[in-house]
Every structure is written in C-alpha cells, then in structure tokens.
Image (cartoon, rainbow, N blue to C red; front, side, top):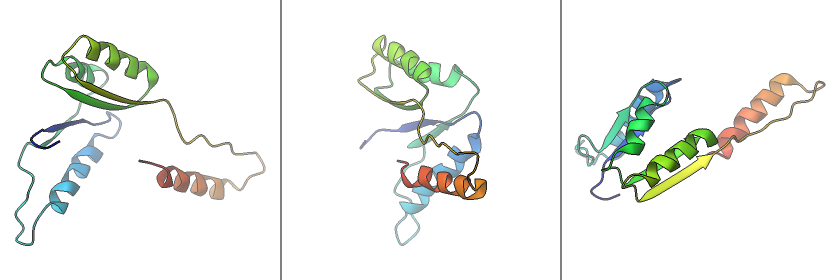
Length: 124
C-alpha cells in the first residue's frame, strides 16, 4: 500500500469505533521523538447510513481496490459496481460467522462467555 490512502467506511450501527480504531495505528507508528510516520489523510473514515457511502465508494473511478466484509447481498452489489468501474481489486468476505448452538439445558452465562471468546479468538 505504499503511497496509497485508505478509506474506511464505518458501520452505521457503531460509527465511533472506526474513529477510535483510526487513532491506534497513528500512535503505534510514532518514533521515540513522538513524530508520526503516517501523514495526515492516509487513513480516512467515512460514515453514513445505509447504502449511500458504500455506493459512492464502489462507483468511483479513482478507487482501485475495495475490501468488504458483510452480507452476500451487499457483496453482490459491490461486485457489480466494481465490474462497471475502474476497480482493479475486490476482496469480499461474505456471510455470517461464529454460529453458536446453545441448548436449553446449558449454563447461559458460560455459553455466552465461551461464544464471545471464540469469536474474538478466530477473528481476523
């Protein structure tokens, strides 16, 4: 990604998490003197409700790559838009994950904790 910028479209359900997450690489890329190695504008956060922000990104002729994690329906829309644009690379991670079956005789607190831990353990 040398020389490129990144636009992150945050979830409309939790938009502030992307803003907070954006501060982490900036802090981690500081040298001993506190001078950041990432220039301003390298990581950009885009927020908005529904399809509007993603639609704009996937139809832009100057966007060369797009990575999306989410529903199959939205992934197919992005793939169609990318085919009609100048986009060179599309990475789609579609569908659900972390299915959990909890039986009626289970200890609910342990099941919730175990499911939560396994989601984090296998994420990435």
